[in-house]
Length: 226
Image (tube, rainbow, N blue to C red):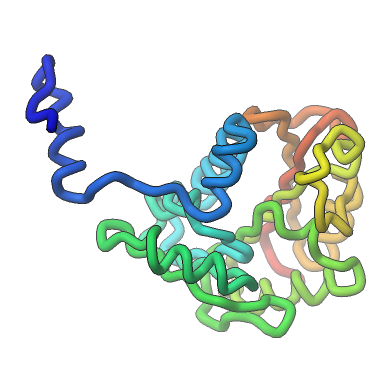
């Protein structure tokens, strides 16, 4: 067992291991790290973007958190984070292996298509979820997310662009039934919000470039119409 480091400033690494043990990847993040490590970088970058956009908010809802491994990036700047997912396997995995008293993310099983979580959140975000929502239910998804927000709450939707799908792997596109072009996502969100700010993303880089060359798109929505 290693008891000290050559340079004393790195002994904090040993102290954290002694106190908290070694961190584990979540159920999905473990699979990603095993099969395509760089993709984990891309996902982490999406959560960093959300954390910057929502910084200063007090209470935020994540819709479709999977194993909530990356949610900690948002929790780093938001005091209260509730993360929900439709799949009990991921929420159970978080409860068993991902939960930490130092971070305190409230993870729950919930299908947003069945109704909102009425707690008046300051913000709501959903990453890599909307493309799995059947188009006939996409309005329910947004309306129920809105029902979870305070009147001045912010909503962020991030999803792969329709243009990216011809380059995606079979594993990446599995279950994708509703990818959109940037313009289409903006039009949909403008049904419910007065302000919709669009961003493009390629790999880990977020920018305001041409939608059709983006791998991934974000809609940052403010000022609800209803």
